[in-house]
Amino acid sequence: MLHRLKRHPIPIQARFRYCLVLTYAFPVEILQPLLPPGLTVDEWNGAGFVAVAMVQTERLRPVGLPAALGSDFFLTGYRVFATYRTAEGRTLRGLRILRSDANKRRMVWGGNLLTHYQYRLCEADVRFVDGILDVRVRSGDQQADIDLTAHVDREVAEPPAGIFSTWKEARRFAGPLPYTFDYEKETHSIVRIKGMREHWNPRPVPVEVREVSMLRSAIFKGVGARFASAFYTSGIDYRWERGITEQLGTSSP
Image (cartoon, rainbow, N blue to C red; front, side, top):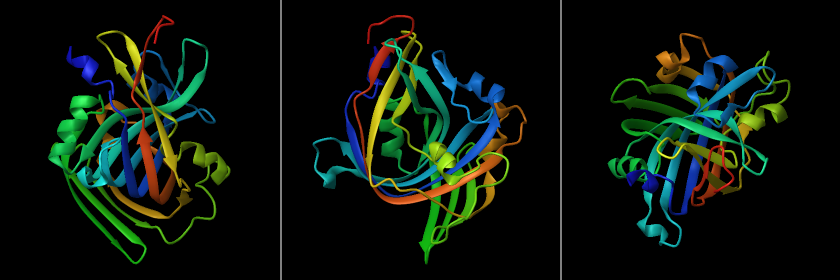
């Protein structure tokens, strides 16, 4: 029963050397069909949001293994901000992953074995010099190409007009949330993975985006994304717990 193996069955830990997250706004009706049963778009002022995360990951490994046995790689991930109402009636905020790309084959293989995060192999040319982060990612199918420059030694005074009024509002959609949600169609269940982070202090930074090809994907039905924010942070210790499975329409985890 291979679907049971994809429930994030073991706790994982890693360190993020740095993390850049771009957030884009879409109409809720465009994003809701991208979510499985049990999840609802997390709205703000009538909009839903997609995060594009770029993470230099270090020493990713099962909890308890020595750091020397961990994997270092560059990751890009595309996530929809969503909410889930548990059988006990709690509303949880989290992310539904649409796609992940990594530049190490071992990570792609392991990620697809143990999760539903849809890993693919990419080429990543990342340069970080004097506060300037240049990211160029090329995916095999050209559906997840990225080309941008972020000035991470600067800050932006105000968020772009029309979506968030303050950076405090924007930080609600600035990247990792307490949960990541999977859907297991074999059992009509939601798998939720709780994440815990340390030293998470994102700063709004200016970014020059030349290409994020995923935003032109057919899944967005030709609706143009509205840039909402770019946040940068570094030196983050992260841990993901074992996934918890809850069948939809029942009270049994």
